[in-house]
Length: 228
Figure 1 (cartoon, rainbow, N blue to C red):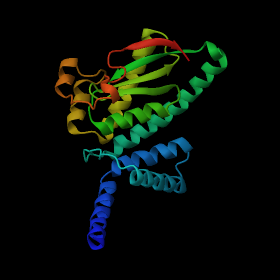
Figure 2 (figure 1 turned 30 degrees about the vertical axis):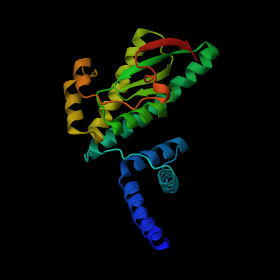
Figure 3 (figure 1 turned 90 degrees about the vertical axis):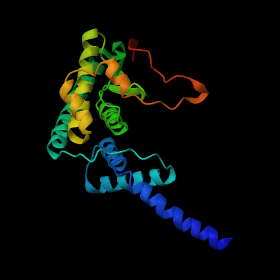
Figure 4 (figure 1 turned 120 degrees about the vertical axis):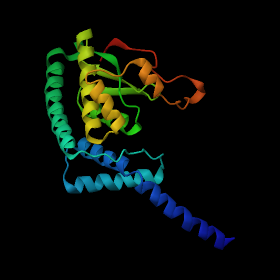
């Protein structure tokens, strides 16, 4: 009946609005990524990013990403400053590699086990690493909380371990800023490495199967040398 259809729409619309509002952490991340891609954090750019984020979430509803409720302003500022320094430093390094080596430049695919199994932390770490020139996220193993990235100019075991240490430092900075107290405790216990495999296994959750029933990509690979 027309009346019942109208009432149903009136109920659905507030639910959808509440669902979008509940995803404010994801909205903030999308706005930050938008501004970073434009390399401009002016108010009008942020507002355009907000409109874009709301449009995407309205057209393509996504599951809510739980937020710990923790926000440390000091560590957020520290992470932001370090991130901007890393972007500038990496930009200079990538420019030098391209100019000096050109097509002879090589890289590696590096697996980085993280401490946290929180979706928001994994998402933030992935974006932070992608926005720094020289690395690209290829795959995310949510079950084991492992990121797989292609890293430019990482041709030795020392280079690979150095990148892993840097990625874990980025994760630690994000956890100090917005992570849960459980993840913060992991940072205190494991300041330079990921937790042992046995401890990580206790915190795993089942992963959604890929189409065709295949296992997550990169679930067994560590790192492999390849050209760029």
